[in-house]
Image 1 (tube, rainbow, N blue to C red):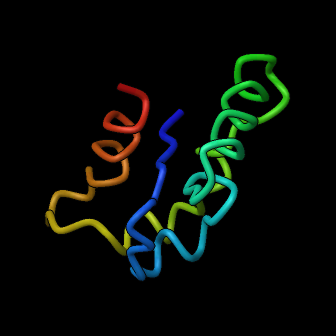
Image 2: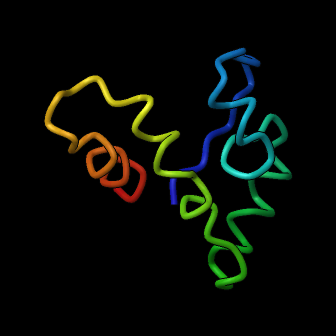
Length: 74
């Protein structure tokens, strides 16, 4: 899973849209989500709608969603 700690309060739409699901401003909330993922109770990356991912795609080959998923999953 790709989780982010946003201590700079970057006001980009992506962090706002996924606050406390993928993007966290509190380390304790981040650790809590990590625990839930390890236990199999959460899978937040699956909750990102494909059309949202495509909106961040700067390539013309329609592989941006796949690239983003690869980045998030390491």
